[in-house]
Length: 274
Image (cartoon, rainbow, N blue to C red; front, side):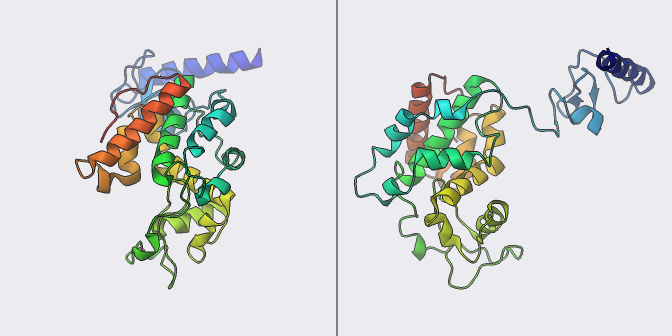
């Protein structure tokens, strides 16, 4: 009874506010402007009371709730092995990457594949593995081909300065690159990303965690908000592939994504390219 009373009181108070503050609050059916939040009670406004916990739409500040999807049940042995088995027998990644380690890394990122509907979850999983497949050649490569010969040091980034003699080229399932990614990834995960970037190529658990770290910080909100697969390409390698820069690699990524969506029994959605 106490819980019900408090809820009713909150609704009543919100209704009072609607009468007192017509400029910031609209009716209970929402229909808010694009830059205004729809609160849990169905009113429009821009403060934390509207954009925070329970926010239904608009520029909500609280993360959306997770669903009951089991990523482990979607990323089956058959699905994972169907990717890695396509790598040649001599590929170093075949003895480095594994479904078991991926699932262990997933414990650190419990929101991956668990936002929105079941179909939304499947599309995010398909998108992640599509990019991983492309970046690593079906889990063949741990490090970027000829990566050591490339300069991935942003000297203007003073927060995460490059260490002499260290290379910040692509490593891991998403091919983590640049000092401004290795630094914060290391801080978040718990390894010295600037002084020991090679850890991403020697510790498979950290390697998968860097891929999920990058995904959750740069890609997750794109795919879960329904923007489509195309913008995820832009988030990962847009400067080198999108807007006609390399249509072949874009087609390859889209091909993997649509294939995995088909395997998981979900429509790939719209806006596939960038």
